[in-house]
Image (tube, rainbow, N blue to C red; front, side, top):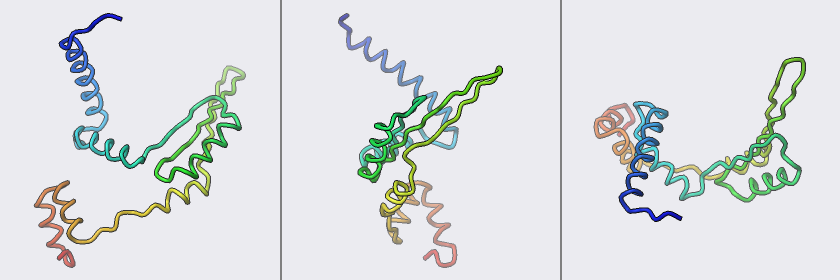
Length: 146
């Protein structure tokens, strides 16, 4: 293993992070803030709200059972397998995807999770944080907006 100086590690990290931030910014577009995106990612990871995907040309029965088991056990996490079969013939190639794990039972379990119950104070606080005080004033000006 080659010893690395702190400066070379810092230069490498700055280079990689700079490129990835620019790429992510281009993907998100001008209306989205990269910092807000990463805050949402962190929050979702903390509460376990993620999607796990297994992708293969063939999903064995054992993996199908594991996907279905994990979907029943992990309410905040969606676990799916995508089987992509390839059929070739007469100068044609066709890819046929099949999603495994998105059963009616799994969807029902995921939809049962309680949503946030909003009342006036938290709603207007969140609106102010996301859109500013002008948006709060506009919402309050709507009849019934209090």
